[in-house]
Length: 275
Image 1 (cartoon, rainbow, N blue to C red):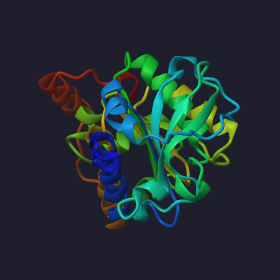
Image 2 (tube, rainbow, N blue to C red):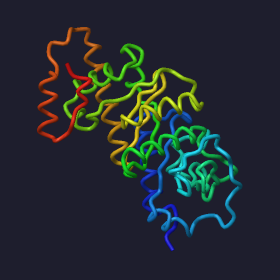
Image 3 (tube, helix red, strand yellow):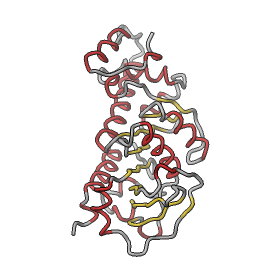
Image 4 (tube, rainbow, N blue to C red):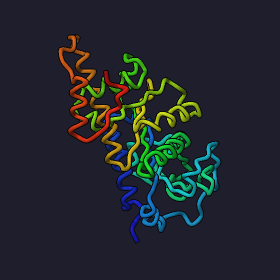
């Protein structure tokens, strides 16, 4: 029998937590990660599930299209830097009930730990991304990407302004996120308002910037989702380095050039963000 820690889902989850920590995006207990398990993931992990799962916990939201599904989740108050050292204490697997309104822990989160306080936000966004991608998206990731946060102090908090700055700062950006990025104004984290605002933006965008807070990203697997966040953050870093010179921008990627990139790479750019 395969140890649950050696299953593909848990190994990928642990690696992504560590990668984010090494990038400096998860100070203290900052950030969180959830993964919607496939049937194969659940079958591989089930032998390690608790013989006596915990009690059901009502979430205050209902995600009907996630009913009965299983999710790997980081724990509330847990430090992502510790996931690689002791996954069972810092990470858990939760099962949703038959209506998608409650969860119970079936593995991990040892010592009475509970899922991230952002779990309802994650699940609302999993629900939307599952719907709009025909089930392809499985990962929701929140990180405190330093340069992205810094941009929320100087750029207008619009999807168009952020998208254009990012697209024009690194050539691969229009290929990686051709629809652009959404932007959510500052809201109290963990609450219903930010959950609703983010899920509405996630109908259109793979990634949403949270003003003065961080980045919320989605994708079909760990590599693609981390790569999306990494690309956005690196482009933001390039933009900041250009601003830091104090010199006027002499040249950038033009709108016609962005269209040429899209044509050659077979993606459809969001024309609302082009002149």
